[in-house]
Length: 561
Image (cartoon, rainbow, N blue to C red; front, side, top):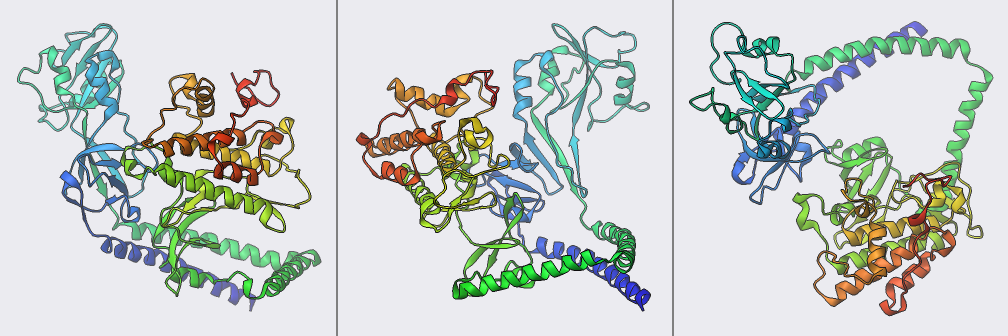
């Protein structure tokens, strides 16, 4: 009987795997059908594999700036944007490589390097750079008797040899690229070209031939995925057979009283959870089954983003309310997303997202009220430990909502210091005492520090720690802003057009500098932070310079220079 049951499980597992493999291919077909083409400036009407910024699920490469004069494409998610020159129906996209353009502007052979393009590693997409010119960069001239068939250009410290470019008619016989590689023991460089001048032997034409416009052939082969998935399903099925057999044998032979006690404890925990939910009565959180969640998200069709513990999907309840689903949790849907999208000015495609100073001030005030409630408004004090722009969500009216309590801790209201086994939070917002106890005990003042660092980023429109800054003085924004206040210099912040804007910005800066004091005892409580934000600017004083600005290189917790 046991053998028959095992055989049934194995057969069922195979059908499930094959079903999901076929269903995914079918969903892919409907997915493409529901995503029409879209107009995009000078590029005209384009579609899959390209997709607009507001529908990232409809393609592989996001295109931005369709409403303006300059269109850009992101070939690899999370990396830099390239200016688009054209997109053809044949699958060719011509982009402008700014790094290469700077090389060519110098007209210096020493600066020539290979392309800096970065393509994603996708199993069903192939990329091919078209019309490349093969260059051989040598520090000393080669044997001219062997290199007569190639053009060359002399530079200060090197000589550049180049072969017949790809995309042009090749002479009969040996391939020119292989021929050049066999004769040249120097580094090989491939760069895009425009055309060959009439006299291709003329040395001065080298930089006239090269171009920063790169033509990339993009080939997507999605219809062949089903066979691959079926093969993977069959291969994984063999593993399922082995795992099921091992589990069945272990369960029958190794099952002990301790194992049975484990299941008993799990059942008891479940009963305790049920009792706790009944105790809250009508205030208990509503629970949904997995099938309910799948229906409300339309089988997880619309992905809003990626959190630290999984994807976030858009859904709709039966009463029409929009929600955000992070698998196990269901949140209110906030259409404006997270605060970070509106405060950083380093993305040229998001210039229209900058908020007015009154709105920024109200957002800071709302976050302060939320933290004050967590610290004092509940029976048990809640410490968030991960306050940052990414975890502040904004509704239609830009009312802030604190989210992501994955690192939060509960603290009795009559206790000020809590124990922690290790640091928690996000670099740039973590209070000093959280990762080095020499600065003091961990308490609700740690959230105050994170709040101060976040508000400084809201004011500066940039991240506090700028690792890409050229000058040391520009790296740490709090130091820069403090020095301006001490010397009574003009802050020169963006978008200040009224006196009210200047007062709100200055007030937010002073409150933030009080919040990021290195000694936790010098930081105000969130109730005091609210009073400072809502009070007059004249009642605020410049706080002491945070001790972190003067940390010695031999400090036991830091290695700052």
